[in-house]
Image (cartoon, rainbow, N blue to C red):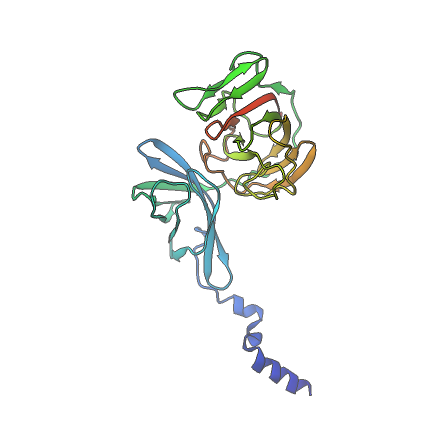
Length: 315
């Protein structure tokens, strides 16, 4: 009877006889030097632009990934063609100019990658990539808190563009309209950050940690959590709940960043607990994830106000 049942299962489930460890040893060869996460630098006429790529196996014979462009969120790459030491893929446009696809070709070059990237408008630029650093760090000892806003001037900050719409009055930093972003002169590595903010209905801003990882600020009161909404690490980590208040009220984030691990407390409620940030956010200042970086406040999306920005760096 037992032999009969085994034979019957083999006939009904033809794949059952292949569910042994040796079946997985026959996976097609993929150069391990291509797999992993990559910090990309794109050479353009306007200077070096940052990007990010993740390449990984999926199942028996597929290679998939995620990609972050110069702007926008992390997007899935359903299929990456890998041939020996080269890779290629194409994905639909997101926020780039043009209606075509974004196409990437590259190959192993030393310990990194290099290739060409063609944007949806048809323009092509060369790129290089290095492996993302692991940034494994133990809990640091904290230094003294630093208040980053003066009472009535922008001391310690600079605009990312030629013009500047930001002003400070009685300790309140204001961006009354869409314009340029605002960046701290000083750079930081690991830190705890307290920041308070207020926005009108349907407005949007963000706080970039080390200038590379955006914590989203957006009018999402009453919405379900998602990875591009209030208190998310934009495009990567969604909050457990939307703890936003209605627009027009002062709100707060308390953020701890140690290496790649981030915790976010929104309006007194922990919504992200010590989760890993895989890579840079679109709109990042650069892709040098191993280096200290500034804070920057997004001012190119909508009106917003900030106050009581206090950072406590690691010693």
